[in-house]
Length: 265
Ligand SMILES: Cc1cc2nc3c(=O)[nH]c(=O)nc-3n(C[C@H](O)[C@H](O)[C@H](O)COP(=O)(O)OP(=O)(O)OC[C@H]3O[C@@H](n4cnc5c(N)ncnc54)[C@H](O)[C@@H]3O)c2cc1C
Image (cartoon, rainbow, N blue to C red; front, top):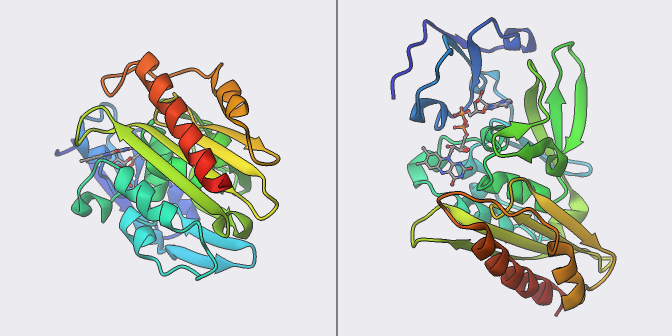
């Protein structure tokens, strides 16, 4: 879709990210150009900042906000990263063609905060922390699980920019199980559930798509069936054309038991 904008700036430095009235950050543009954007008169392209897509760090992995889904899925992981298949599973859970995956960015997916945002699922399930550039030139860090607060809503304040996501080594080396379900054969995710078991036997259950925001619960050790049911008993279930809340509750509860059983087996 053509947007009625009068300016397109390619950001080269951090100072270029100061937005004028009517300007909007542009990453892959797969959402921005997919529907009308009333009030948007200019775009500031983040991809020209040249951030390395994926970087090894002493503590794990840094994924740039501008890393595309395709680049992340194509990254050659450390052989010790047993959780890496989750990257491909979450990329596949996005209802988009390989062409869109080549443009859509991880940061754009998190910033949009759609319940079916599978990059949010991935990063939440792996305890990733978002690195946020603040308009005063500073930086703040917040767990992705807390940054997404509802459909289309994040904690990002005006002028804040997602710079990267830091994924800790312990999560990359964990054991994971994932299940996804859609209401129709090629439908958007209605429920996306991940269990992760760390080296210390702690189990982390992450539920997305079925809920308005990510739900994450950590069990100190192998969780019983009753504990899993208990955690999900007072969750708010999302309601849209991709699934009714009671169906989402039923199917998610089933999937949650499956993934927890799989990682603890
Ligand atoms: C065919 C198709 C299928 C799709 N399927 C799904 C799906 O299954 N699940 C889903 O969640 N989404 C889906 N989307 C929506 C969207 O394409 C994805 O969420 C994508 O990851 C957005 O990334 P982008 O880089 O294209 O973002 P853009 O369109 O460039 O930007 C999206 C929004 O995020 C803001 N933004 C981007 N980067 C940053 C940043 N670093 N810091 C702060 N704000 C930022 C922009 O200002 C804009 O408001 C789909 C879109 C299409 C066209």
